[in-house]
Image (cartoon, rainbow, N blue to C red):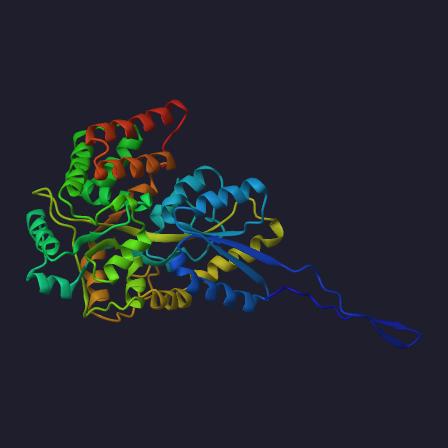
Length: 424
């Protein structure tokens, strides 16, 4: 997987042809930084296939979602080679605003391969900075059907009262209701997205934009009510004991081993659960419980990842980088990627997911249509960090909803004083 140009030169001297040895150019290599370790295997094959076809070496470096931006930043500061990034969708706005990624608008003449809505989170001021890949991810509460049957839950809970009743039956059997790795703080905001969707009467995205524009405050009632619900989840013992000292990997293991009856998370978890021995016969998925009368549960999601080109890529490798993201987001590759990740709802308009079972089909037909965008995709990183820390503290009982929202508002005020302007 190396780009080597071999040139055979014939020099005619006195009628004799003299053959000179082949001359090799410098090896050409693309370096790709990526998030989502759970997708490493299919990503590596995509890189290998592209490399083999284009006679180039592609080095894939994958890091956990909550670490890769730190690693990427360190690499940028060190002047290391960076060409392409397989990025979290939530980081695109920040990366574009800071000039980390290239404007792809004039370089991509195949935007019509995607569903128009899939480009929205990666388009700022009518300029496209990232290309969606894989599937439209969404979220739900996975549950163990055998445990539900064992403790006498004959109907999946729909509202919070039913949810509490189910949790009580599960705890009585010596099993934790919900597996959650609160020690990995990057997951906590998803719980806020679910509650905030309902406390805003299903206008969470609009409220977030208004807040970042300074037209609303993080201390407003709908924010406070959302944090109050989060605090109640902790007080009502819905999570595993010691939730804030538990990692997400441990939480997954608790769910797979039957020590926890439920697991709230994204559809990116599905393939791992299947590999861990779960199946559509053993596992179901339910909507987040109704918390606020007059509102309805909205899953949280979006095109989870995007291909971007590093803004300071060496010009000699730029065309190869554009060629790579074209290949990686093509219909053929996307269809294969969906199969490997057991995902549904392709971001590509001409790709239909192959439903492997009823669970995948239900996610595509019942959850995806009621999905709203991850709010941390538009929060600045400092706000995201503040939410992570404050939610963890509220769940653990170390702070109050009032103090949590005040701390987040102070973070925003400090950013504004420092010149922050929402990049819309």
